[in-house]
Image (cartoon, rainbow, N blue to C red; front, side):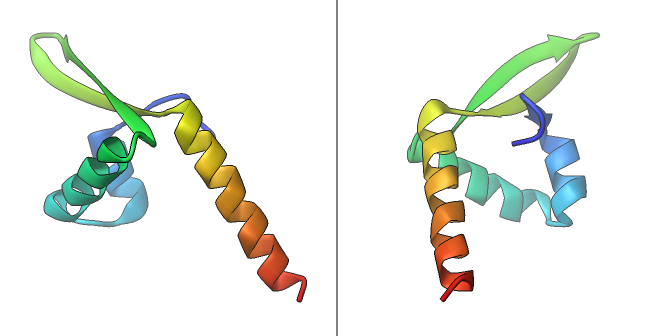
Length: 73
């Protein structure tokens, strides 16, 4: 959640995953309402960016708290 948005190619690069693997994860996250896609054209080329939703931020923070609770056992 460092950046407001991230492009598909940047996410793929950061995570070290294949196009198909990332696409399936993105599809699930969008279905659950955790992220939203922003599709546009830049210099006549398609560009897709993804942003975390309010629900996604809440779920992420909840997940981090659960991990911290496990660590502090």
